[in-house]
Amino acid sequence: MAFYTALTGLSGAQTDMSTIANNIANVGTTGFKRSRVAFGDIFAVSPLSNPNRVVGSGTTVRAITQQFGQGATETSTSALDLTIAGQGFFVVKSGPGGTQTHFTRNGAFGVNADRNIVDAQGRQLQLFTTTENGAVLNTGLDATVNAILPLASGVPVPTTAINISTNLPADAPIIANSPIYTPLNPYVFDRDNAATFNASTSTTVFDNLGNPLAATIYYVRDTVADVVDPFHRWTARVFVGDTELTVGGTPGLPMEFDAAGVLTAPVAPFAFDPITSPGSTAPLALNVDHGTATTQQAQPFSVAVIEQDGVPAGQLESVSIDAAGLLRASFSNGEVQVLGKVALANFSNPQGLKQTGDASWVVTPQSGEAITGEAGRNGIGTLLSGNLERSNVDLTTELVNLIAAQRNFQAAAKSIETDNQLMQTIINLRS
Image (cartoon, rainbow, N blue to C red; front, side, top):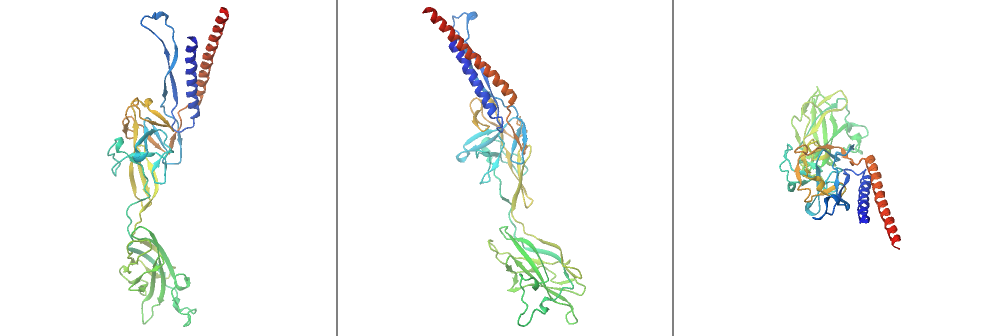
């Protein structure tokens, strides 16, 4: 009988060492929770046994319990690295239609090719849907949605007007009168030849799909005021991409200034015929308005204002997650979208959860059903963005425990050896 009693101690010590070794092996695993072996003694008692003379039958492993104490936090550079400061678990789903639900303390999340926020195993982080103000609509586990980062935001608005204020130099030459141009070599405007225009400026406009297009305005001086014609005349040649804007097939926006350099024409926005740019699905009709601030003065060419009224679809620039789990996305057009609130869960008995690896668990009858909720409410901890929870294994403690488990193993082995020697002595007496 003593053999089997000692054997239970040997087996228990081996289980203890294996558990401690697993804790030590995962000292660097993000979100890992150490385990502890709970032992119980064995007594075989019958109704007729004398309670004062019952001898124990050894030990047994009653449970290997998980210790859900908080691990240390480690700062990271990713806003999608999350730590729960307190109780709770992240909710992640996998499988067809998200049918498999797991709960994890490993908050190292990233983005996959489909823009889903996922963990290292590709399981999708779950969000509670919210209003634009961040109020949660439903905290039920079945009501969660996948966390997806959009690439763009907003509806693009095509450009309809370019407003510009500039100064054209009063001493600019009339290029067409240059000696280099002769009847055999007449003046022809060429946007690729800087000798055929006096000045230029550009801006970016947008088609109906939000595609950016370069709009360039070239200024060409035509005449200088004299007795016959008291106005200084210029022509503005406008290009969108490689297409020149025209009115009835005639290119150019005529401009005239009086002797004081005040713009006298056009006095209203100048409307060009619509064009269809490559990649767009609707014509682009532009008005160019030089306003009243455009002048011709004895100063170098300068642009005081150049603006347009088109708006592209905003491109994703950054994401943020606050302590309450609210996920926001910021876009290049200045828009900020609330995508949802990170779903968290807690359990009546977390130690009853079944481990599935990678600091993840699934529900069991012992754990009870998940109690979902928002960060910072109903006993669930708050979130720390840009942080990761390290393993809660204390290496010094585990090494001390390992030495104690080793001694227990050696003692049980010594007990078996002693029982064997006694049995051998008894056998030798009979022989």
